[in-house]
Structure formats: C-alpha cells, structure tokens
Image (cartoon, rainbow, N blue to C red; front, side, top):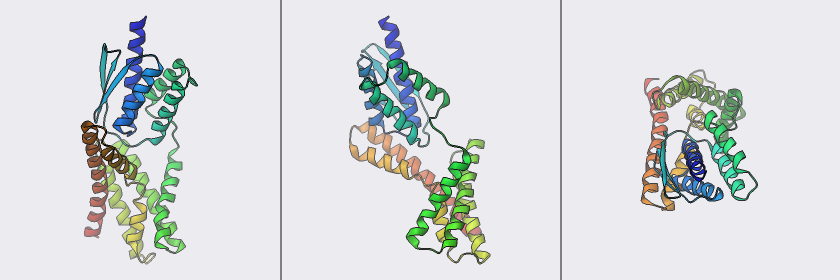
Length: 253
C-alpha cells in the first residue's frame, strides 16, 4: 500500500512540476512547491529542476523525471497551483481534491482562460498605456488600440498555426510597423514611432525578463543561475524578433 502511495506522490509531483515549468515559474519556486506538496502528503520529497526537466525522489527510493518545453508565461496557472499547494499544507484542501485538480489542469494544459476577443481587447488597452506617458492626443489612443489589437491577433493565430519559433513575433512586429507607417502616410498621425511603441507592448516579454533576472539574482544554486540565463536568452530572442520585424518594415517602407 505504501509503495502505491509513493508511486502516486511521485507522479503527482512530476505533473505539478511540469505545469509550473510550462507556466514559466522560477526553478527555486518549483522545487519549494513540490517539496512542500510531498511533506503535506507525509513523504520526504527531494526535487531537482533544470531548464526543461523535473527530477523527483520520494522517500529516497522512487526516482523519476519528466521533460517539458520552454514555453511562455502563465501566471494564472502558477498562482492556482501555488494557492492549492498552500491550502493542502494547511489542511484546507484534501489530498484527493488536490490530485483531481492537478490532473484536470494537466489534461487541459491551462487553468482559467479567456476568449480571444477578451484577450485582444485587453491587448488594445495595454497598447494605449504608453500614450499616457507621451501625453498624446486622443486619436493616438484610438490608433494604438486598433494597431495593437491587430498585432496581437496576428501573433496569437500564427503561434497556433506555425511551429517555427519567433516567426509569429517577427511578422507581428512587421505588420505593426507597416500599419503605423501607413497611418503616417495617410496624414492621420505625425509620430508613427509612438504608435509602434504602444502597439508592441502586448508582445514584449516583460514578465519573462523580470522573472529570469529575479531568479538570477536570488543565487539559490548554480543550476538556477543557468536556468535563469537560458530563460533570459529566450526572452531576449523574443524581443529581438519583434525588433527585427519592425526594423525590416522601416527599411523597406
């Protein structure tokens, strides 16, 4: 009976670690969460996390690992799992309920999600924010909303259709710059660079860069520094792809 229980704990911890890596959580946070889950279930769990893999040892005898891929950022997933793990530790959530919730998230590969139109509208509002800093007229806010929404929509659907990494971001950056230049050519705006800056905001990996730097300066272990360096490089490649797309449009037009 104990062996079966140990097996279930190792599988539960591995799936939890997989979800946290997919959500973009820091390595030390993943290790702490998984070890806390094991302790809450009455087992001694040791966890080792790399950039794309989670190694788990339960009671010094059951060692397993699971591979993941370097994905985007899903703060909702990280928050949900972290909240449930703390509720489990505080006995506010039963082990059975916790396992069922993790299994459900693992099958769906996401937690709370929103329709595309809600995300697109949110991206439009995010695009408008820099216009407050630049103190631009009202019509700049409207154009930023439109261009930012289109740019986000292109990135969203191309990411689903194409398996080529960073291509969706390059094309989105290109389209955003092209639309901004078109607005300038039609004499609708004078400073098209402001439209570009605002419209790319939903695409910029700000959270990924912040988490990578935070993990780097925490100095928990050398492997965490290597993991954060890889994540930071990935975020910089994302930003570079957007930048190259914009530069290509500016050079051509």
